[in-house]
Length: 115
Length: 113
Image (cartoon, rainbow over all chains, first blue to last red; front, side, top):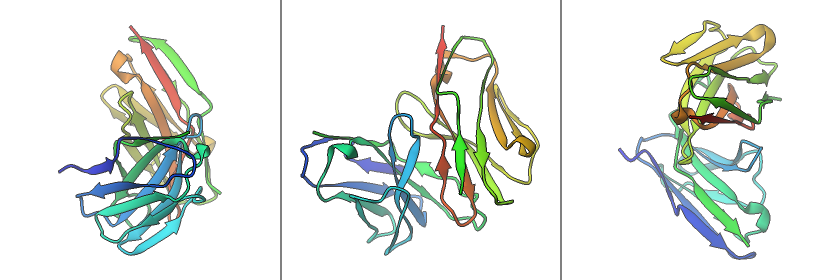
């Protein structure tokens, strides 16, 4: 099993450009998440999905959109990139356990720089 | 609201020293889970441990041990006889049922040979 994979690994954008980050998991997990990691701030949740066709906002959703058309894929889009979106982006997935015990499995991350 | 505080931004130790990473959490819920993740220089996040709020027993796994104290809302992580390979960023996280995983800011651990 590949686990959670992310494409691309690195990207440099100019302000105003758009791009899509792809996350794929082969563990048949229901839940998927997008986080961003910034120095001194840990990981912050951008958007998440509890199943195919559903998405919801996390802690820092502004400037991002997501889609979950297939269970195994979760896409994160930046319509008009800004320098404040320079960050490392992590995707994660988990199999829900009713009491919140589910362990999240993380992808390797995508390092995005917006000039 | 849920909050996790890792007050130690960076810790440096010499190999074979013991080191404790502090984690203090805030929640009003009685049922919750606490996690520790490791992020080595390669960048991926590695799950280390999960503990539920009803289990205050300390846990030991090799050189790693965890001390959970509800009275002080702390879930500290100790590495015994540290090694260079332990150098990483360590994150503590909290999850309350129906809510999302909340991470602390992380502690950078540098182990020098």
